[in-house]
Image 1 (cartoon, one colour):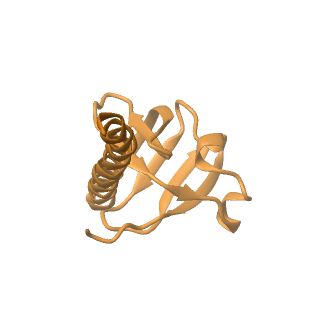
Image 2: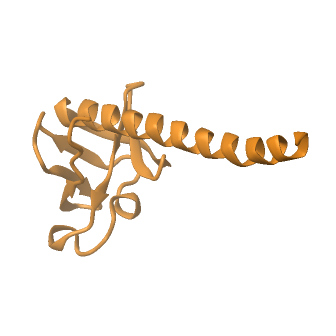
Length: 119
């Protein structure tokens, strides 16, 4: 009987862990989106990296981290933000705007991004 309980625990505990992790990850992604969406972003990019399957970047002279999920479109020539954005590129987004403007290599790219509803 004890072996049966052990097997059930071995199955149930990871499932519960995965459910809880997914729940908090989703809440964190929603909070990061709302922070990004409500912010006016203007400056020169210091770094671009991946964070939780999204794109994150920091501006020069700022500790603020912006996390969002941009997608390629006709305005980007089919190229993605992580490919085009480099240290020194300029970026601008008005608060609650649905478009982020990236100036990189003397070209202007407009990115839309995935919107998250409030949970």
